[in-house]
Each structure stands twice: as structure tokens, then as C-alpha cells.
Amino acid sequence: MNVFITRKIPQTAIDLLVNEGFDVSVYGKDNAAGKNILMKQTKDADGVITLLNDRIDAEIIANMTRCRVIANYAVGYNNIDIEAADKKKIIVTNTPDVLTESTADLAVTLLLACSRRILEGHSMVVNGKFNGWKPELLLGVELKNKYAGIIGAGRIGTAAAKRLKAFGCKIIYFSRKRNPSLENETGAKKVNLDTLLKKSDFVSIHVPLNSETKFLLDKEKLSLLKPSAIIINTARGEILDETALIQMLKEKKLFAAGFDVYTNEPEINKKLLKLKNVVLLPHLGSATVEARGEMALLAAKNVINVLKGRKALTPVLSKNR
Image (tube, rainbow, N blue to C red; front, side):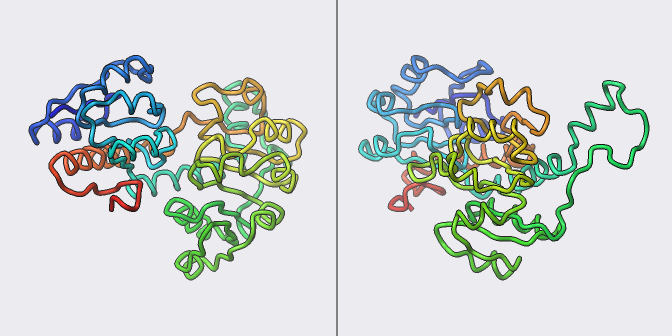
């Protein structure tokens, strides 16, 4: 059986597939495969491992003649037409859990970089503009006793909240379901979205992108934030109105914002690049040796299980569990 991988992933996962008897082909270029390539390479594949920036739409899925499993090398799966795959009885999987710690680490890293104006300080030093200590030089804000609002109290949101609690933050959260474990461990309180936005000093976004969360934070919702607030997004760019947020940052209606994801990724709004009160990263949420390696192995194991007649380890639809 044939497995197509849309980009080079850690070799351990490729070796695992080969050792299990699969013929593996990998798109070798260091850029996302275009639709024509995806149509051609997935047509006769029994299993496919995709990346988050591969758009696997209904047309590509309809063109698949043998595929039984699409293993997404990401926790999010908004890049795949799940309904179209389900109609063709193709199981779609993702990689939850294994990137929780790395992404939570990065969310807090962004918050610290924003709150202490790290990039502005770095730029001042490397450009020879540091002339000595001054009482009001690049004043930031402390985390202790501040309200940290977590939007989406799933695995990553919970892990981020625990880290922020250790810094002395008071945790509030907005989520579809109550999270008793989070509440017991951090003293967190569940609130509605408006309350969270009005009360929080720091907001960290951790919801998946779907029809309910797309532009969840529109212009009206963003306007509820304090002028002193910091907002961090390590989830998906389309969850917030990027244009409205940029305008707020430009007008100093927010202290700062940290971005790891963007609305039209990998394209970055040029207005963002001109702002000093932002920290911009190239989608590094799970970018650790440990996380990316575990993600690759989990994707490979999902493919192996399905193609060998066993249950997928992490299917995205509950009926396939």
C-alpha cells in the first residue's frame, strides 16, 4: 500500500512506515504542495499525511480512488473538508496531546515578550541606541495579580493557564464546557466572553477554528478590551478580526499583541510589520524537537492502524473512536 506525505517530516516516522511495509513517497520541496500536485499524488494513495497548510478540499477528496486515512500533522484540522472525507469513508486524524506543552510554552513566551517589551529592548541594543539605564526606559507590566483570560479551556488552554497561575495571575476562562480540573488546580472561574474581554489584562486564544469560532473576536468584541490589555493568538488567525486589531494597536487602544498565526498565513498584513507593540512569530507553536517528532510518529501510527484494519488512535470524528 502507498502512503503519500505532503512534506518532509521527521525521519523516524517515515522509517516506521517503511518498516511496516508501506511504499512511502514524500513531496520534497520546502513549500506547500499546490492543488495540482495534491490531486496527482493523492489520487492512488492508500493513506495521506498532510500538513496544516495543505488545503484538502472536496475536489481533492473526490479524486481519491483508494484513500482510507488522512492523517493531519497538526492538532487543528480546518484545512480538511471533514464532511467530504466522511462521505467517502475516509478517516481523518490529528495530533492532539503531543504538542500541548510546546504550544502552551510559546503562548506564555509571547505574553512575556509583549509585557516586558523584549523585542523593543533587543532592537535598541543591536541598533546602538542603548545609552544607559533610565528610570522610565521601556516600562512593561508585571503578570502578578493580573487577570489572565483563557479563551478555550481545552488541553492547550489549560496548560497555558497553569503556567500563568505560577506567575501569579488570576485565571478566568471562556469555554463551551466547564473545566473542573482547571478550576481546582488554578482557582479559575468560568465567565462569558464579554466579561472575559472586559476584565482581562491578558487574553490568550486557544479555541480550534470552525464555523462557531471564525471571527469569534470581531471588531465589536475586541473593542471590549482594556487599553492596557495584551492579546496573544497561538490558535488560528481567522479567529479574530486582524484588521480591527491592527487598528487598535496602531491607535494605542491596546498595550500589545503577540501573533504566532495570521489570517492569510503565510502572508502577513504589512501594517503589522510597522507596529512596535507587537511580537510576530512564524507559526512556531509546536516547533520543538520533542513535539514535532511525536506529532510525526502519531500521524504515522494513525495511518498504520487504519490501513491494517485497526482503529485510528486519534480520529477527529467521535464515531470513529
